[in-house]
Length: 120
Length: 109
Image: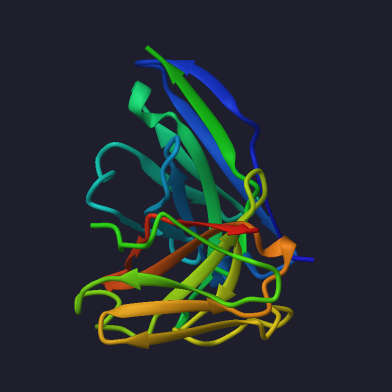
């Protein structure tokens, strides 16, 4: 069974760092991009960026580039989204999802979401 | 910027509803890569339409997708109570980037 399991919710303060994870199982991890999508409170979904476990290539939305870092450890089948200095505006639910490489442009499995709450 | 969806739509059981997703020719109108996702709050979003009009295995044929110019559409026919959820469109925008719509809240009356 294909699964994307995300780390638990986090409550942090502005300026703190955070790394959340997304572990894939039940499929060939290195053949699918892992994408990160956020949902700000009361808002819709926003594509943030992605990482390809096969070669660790990353791509970011202009709106978040420089604000977050996406990485992957293919030995454990885990992708990460991290912040070095959180802001209150980072409060959101963060989803990971997978996208098959080579000609596929949709996200066919999603994680359950990680709620990140940042207090000022 | 985000694709434009109606904030909410509603319909009675058995009826049909259509959700629009307005983009530009740099996204929805420029690529054959529009997808739709169903999201019940607290659960993982679910892919229901890919590549404008393709239904993944297991998705009921009550769900259908289409496109006209730079606007994509999701039609749900034979509404059921379980269809009450948020629906998001998403389009490829080139150079490995994507954009979502603002989401539509479907209420089954």
